[in-house]
Amino acid sequence: MKTKITPVLITIAIVGFVVWKLVENKQTIDRNAELSLIVNTVVPVKVEKPQYASIDQQFRVNGQIVSGNEVGILSKTTAVVLKKYKKAGDAVGKGTVIAQLENNVIRESLRNTETDFAKAQKDVERYRNLAASGAVTTLELEEKQINLRSIENRIAELKDQLANTAIVSPVSGVIDKDFFEEGTLLTVGSQVADIVDNKYLKMKVNVTEKEMLKLKKGEKALITTDIYADKTFFGTIDVIAPKGNDLYNYAVELKLDHNNDLKSGMCATVIFDRSGNNAKSIVVNRKAIVGGMKNPSVFVIRDNKACKISVQLGQVNNDFVEITQGLSMDDTVVISGQINLKDGYEVSILKS
Image (cartoon, rainbow, N blue to C red; front, top):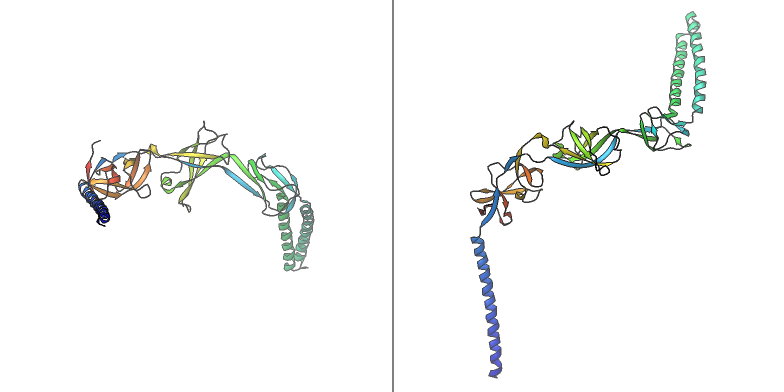
């Protein structure tokens, strides 16, 4: 019986010893980790001083080429289209007849009204003579005169309607779209055609509020297109919207220099370059920024300790970032080792 119990007791003793040893080792590791945190609070870092320099202020924005003179033609009368002289894609000059509307009814009304006018003129002259002799009253004469003016106004209206049955282009350009065919009934206000003048082009873009503040009306800008990769074009800032849209962007329009290649509707890229103003500001190595571009911060060294401060960013290029608020030229900025830093940690500065 004793021979069976002894191995069991030995096994239990061995297991207990192993468990105790593992627990002791875990406690030792934890104590060493705590000691390492206490001992290694001095973090090695690399630092740089901010610079006072000009930063590349060139930025690109995509947009669209549009006609600077695009006109929509509306019908000014109600009538059926008798003849269509011009269609979409045709070039037209100012005053070119695009379509002729049916006008027989208007012409007949005009002839009848002109006849009534001649009769009314005779009536006025006859009543004026009768009034002079006292045969009719002044009120009766005035009624004839009012009738004459009414007929005269009606003639003017009919002549205007007759003129509007010939639909003409108010500008020179190309018909972009037409909305009628022969036999179409056009009413007052109906769309007839859109005329685009490609001799005067502009480019429309949207810029951010920061970019908008750098632009000035009258400044030149370079324009490129994918379709003409070997050519460059130029435009002048003509309009800067005084109010942003719901996305906090501002509309900017550029008047394009004269050219024979660009067309309305093309996509293009405008390059705004503000580097020529020689403006200088505080810049730091881009590696110094922690927290990303939305919530940027940097670590600076004060009394041999890391101090985390929030900053505001301006222009950004490949290597440097403009700091508009938060830093001075007297600060020393950490550019390497931030991953191990917390606010208040002591640091040792590594030599480059």
